[in-house]
Image (cartoon, protein in one colour):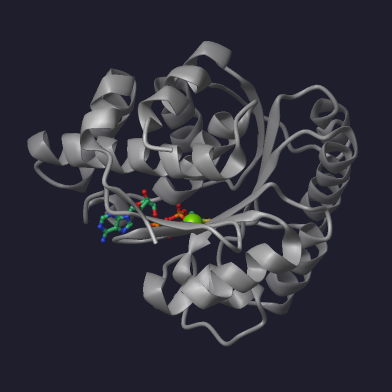
Length: 262
Ligand SMILES: Nc1ncnc2c1ncn2[C@@H]1O[C@H](COP(=O)(O)OP(=O)(O)O)[C@@H](O)[C@H]1O
Ligand SMILES: Cc1ncsc1CCOP(=O)(O)O
Ligand SMILES: [Mg+2]
């Protein structure tokens, strides 16, 4: 499992349709990141159509960043369809520990068996019911403090769990990887975590979820490294990051991936 560039090539060959039920902050950022990577995003959240769309999309992502009761009904219905028809889906538990509404919604969505759960350290800790230090959508716990929670969550749910931060940690409950790609400007731009969840959704289509998630994180972090070389701050970084997602080749990923099996 060292040819991480192959996973990028496979994702681009599929150019998968990915349905995203995401938050208002992330919609545009996420769609642009996914297009630049080589996927086809569709932001479809209405209660009247989310489940129908989930019956034919190639992957689904669900992000609880800006919740309302109607959205929760749409999320649950879409996740149930994905689970029933065997479509891979990715959960992004934004600020999962912050309120009872978020805790309850996350717990409900976990029963619909996500293929991958991608969150920051505080969010992954919160999903296990432990006290997390999250500051709204931002992490206040270290990735290493969330490793045990990630393993437990993976074992309990059957999902691949990805904890992102300065060094990402990905596990299926038995195997685990650390990915050291990325740049400190990434958390300075809103919705780059949400956008990553969409990219992970695109990678898992027709690919092994653990391998595809690791490859997606390495590719995405590498794009951050490339963008930082020419950025003058978070604004120009955001623009350069989309360009880098588009420009990076499978060969670049093979040369630049900083992935270690633990
Ligand atoms: N301090 C950091 N240094 C390098 N990369 C980072 C850092 N913080 C986050 N990242 C990267 O930013 C992306 C989004 O992760 P993160 O900020 O944890 O998500 P979220 O925005 O959901 O909290 C990931 O690719 C992660 O590896
Ligand atoms: C700021 C904010 N508030 C609700 S959702 C959201 C976006 C969070 O994006 P990310 O988790 O990628 O930083
Ligand atoms: Mg997030």
